[in-house]
Image 1 (tube, helix red, strand yellow):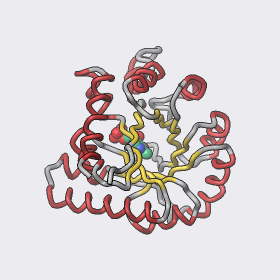
Image 2: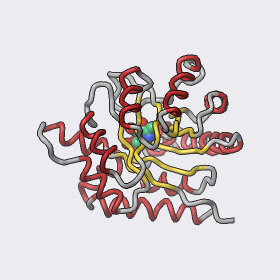
Image 3: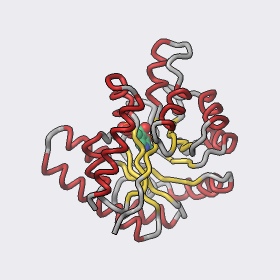
Length: 250
Ligand code: PXP
């Protein structure tokens, strides 16, 4: 049986990181988003962080106004970001944990410990028309809470697996892969749409694409890095091909 086509969301945060290194307007993340869509991205992902270290409010306003494919707004569940989501009304809102001192999003959202605070925020985002996704570790406890909270989507954090692969720790990598595989099957069995993201490259995306429960990958840092060498369109085309090859192997 042919599994459903896997969607690719391209995270363009790090185009803004390069822009902000110099100040000014270049390179423009909105131009990158248009190019990513032309190259086959099914959606654009952007994380407006509390410290505005990459994407800024004016970028979000332009994404919301201009993009021809769905916008996935990654956000901390803070009052400030809730107000911005209600203003921009993106297609999807992905709730992520955020610590000011971290280099990137480390670990999934503590949905088990924060259920009481998350429940009204999820309801507000749904009322604003956003498809709510929770960025969580691939374990049964947070997935079960996501289902209880009525989240239509979970995004499973692939960081532990990708780091183990990069470190050449084969035993840990295999264990983390199995954790993702069973987490995805568990979530899909509860009727939740399953996404994945963090640290994916061509090889890890190809391998994970063979897990039928996944519907979407969100990939940023690797693609923007590859774009330096081969260009953004070629990097996205190669990623699309890797994902299609992985999925065809099912
Ligand atoms: N998905 C989520 C929820 C994230 O927070 C991130 C990192 O911002 C990504 C996907 C993309 O990760 P990467 O940039 O490592 O591909």
